[in-house]
Length: 254
Length: 318
Image (cartoon, rainbow over all chains, first blue to last red; front, side, top):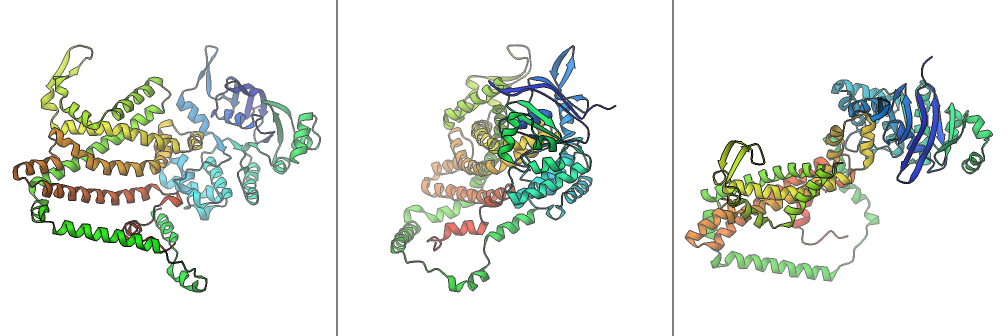
């Protein structure tokens, strides 16, 4: 019996007086695709950013693959993890951002190579070969030498996914990956994500794409006001939400 | 990589052949008499100015020619170049360090950086130069050892250590560091914070994020004003003539104090300053182009186009 990929216990986070996460409990099994939905300001993105410690939760524990994220327990107290070990944790958790955040001064190939060369110390020729394969996997082999500014939003996001995959992560986080895209470009990104899910990757996707959640998701989490209100199989939650707030939200987006 | 940048520059200029095929759709622009009149007046003034300078017997052009490549002048020119390059290099390094201090989480580092900028931007450079030149009045000896009055390993006499050149270098570079730190800070701030997050999410260390992700992008913002600082520094070095810095202006002054050809020697010096700034402008263009990679629209035209813009009397007919 192996540990779940992600286990959150009573995770809390506030910005000043504003409580964004008010005690999140969540378990995600290996290979699951979990879609997190909910109104804006409900804490979905913050939860995602806590998982790779881009935000430091103020209370609670997050374990990824059995490892406590961002802290270590010594003498019964939590202490911040030394930088080098935090970096190793982040390396194994891929993250895709709403606004892509590709490195504009590097080509598509250079973006995918960056982590291999700068973090994993892979030699440049090997990194170039591996990056080329990953660009091919997201269907952008012919755009390898384009700069991000010369690519469409959909292409940029696919490069960003390839950049994360280059680190061979065990978990992929997607923070509204299609929200900044023109409608006709959403499909190509979802297609890449669907392939990734089929390959067995554990994925957490904050999204407004209910179609994707229903079709690809194994589990759906509905958040509101810093709490998980309802969760379960996507088809069931989307078709017959049990909670009033879930019903109200879904009636607006479906 | 460079090839694609070149192609982009070229693509910005439409091919002439395409324009010819569009004859039928040509737009005829109205004649603008006011603009032509203004251009005529300016041209007349320029020609008259040029003529009166060329034929003016008080300007002693023959002496200008004699001294333009004089050995003493060239030595001063060399000192000016050395001072400019060295002060800028030290100034840029100081600027980056101080800018990073200002973004630090440590309040002491931030306060130190702010105090440095406050002091060296707040006092005149001329005063700072004279101050460094006379530093021996405050610290007659400089030593290596335990601070706060502890034993010393070695000591030097300050006057022997701080020559005119060293004082000039200290004054110029430390002052430059204060201005450069503001330029670097603006550059760092212009980089989207998402860039640091994306790099951190890959597992990069803070130092690597700075070196590989943030600084290369900040350079695009930093390089143009730094070019200006360099060009400004070329001429600011002339201030060190007050502390016998042996730069271009100092040697020109020494010469005219003996032969009284004040105007001719100032022209000689000015011509060299113009040559230096022109060369620096060309260098700036290539640096800007290098750091604009991946930022399509910011390449500021071709070099020829840029010079041409400054040579044309009237603007394009748009």
